[in-house]
Length: 224
Image 1 (cartoon, rainbow, N blue to C red):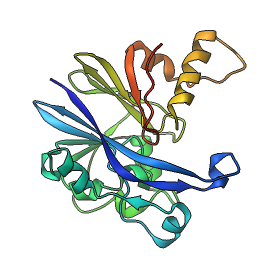
Image 2 (cartoon, helix red, strand yellow; image 1 turned 90 degrees about the vertical axis):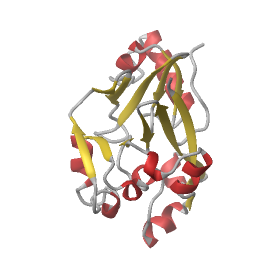
Image 3 (cartoon, one colour; image 1 turned 180 degrees about the vertical axis):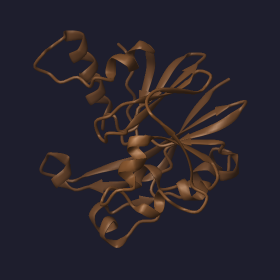
Image 4 (cartoon, rainbow, N blue to C red; image 1 turned 30 degrees about the horizontal axis):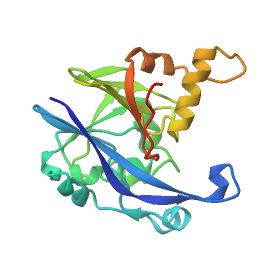
């Protein structure tokens, strides 16, 4: 049996300069547990140790990973596998608390994260950091796939999970909001040449998802 549970790991304030509007926007930081008899996968790990400049820019409110796991009946010791949709600080911040646990990431994403001004380096290369680098799609557990969904970053990836009641996609920041994902699905159906559709969307829809969940939106996309 496969169970998926959302974890609330805090929030941050995206400044107006990044929202495309006149006002800042408060966004949740969400992670997801995938629990099976053979292990527990954690998709994203939330906000980690920051620095003054980044904190002043985003005003993050951090909920400790250990606290969120405790409320789900788990501890950091129960996590057997980690996947980050990408390695910005608000998605991989809890990785150093899971030293020795294998982290799934696209090679392109790890290369970018080790460059300058991409993320907070101490959240990427820390004592005990263990990466399994992927170059494209991979079935990491039976019925659980990592699917590249580039856009927000070149190495962004999503997780597809087959469940007894239908397939769930953990989309991370492939889209900021469920409405954006829904608009892309409709644009693909309409075959509008004047509306850009992510090239990976066709692959995601081949899994016939029943629910699509996001990293910064509490809303859930479901098919009509």
